[in-house]
Image (cartoon, rainbow, N blue to C red; front, side):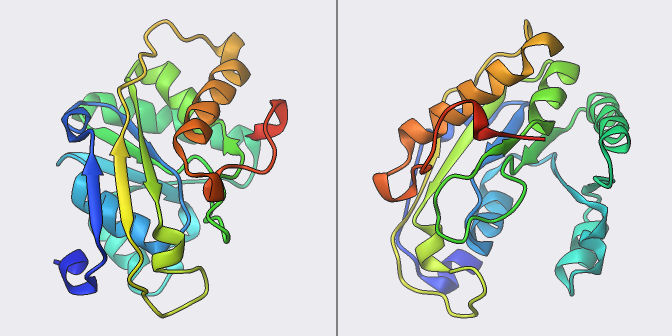
Length: 202
């Protein structure tokens, strides 16, 4: 309903890949991303955000009421423990996950380096990863703006990436591989300015 009210032209492709028990990941450049993700991911999918999200007006309270997951990202050791708890919880409750691997919104729409959390979650759960590639949302609703513009949007669900043979020794390799897949499928204006080993973030 929100997307109908906003009226942005929208193209969705690869929706046949949106019916799996999986870790869905999404590039993040706008609040529109959250609206689209909440609409298009399967029922039984929960999000992950830093624990401070509860203090965001309205959104934080809705996030908590919807039983999404909050983690402590204050330091590396607590973050690892948090991801272990998340993996155990989603397996026990038969849930899927949605993760924004950049960890923050891109102000320009260009792909930022990825954090490693979604890779660790994939290794622990053995869930496939389904990349959701969003384009145009940074133009439809720019960061630090209250105005929604009539920019064309697209959402593409890419084929699932199997992770059942992934190991902790190759985290950097998997991270770079998934980041490269995103860079390949984004338009020129949203491709990262720099590629290579430094595409990863801790």
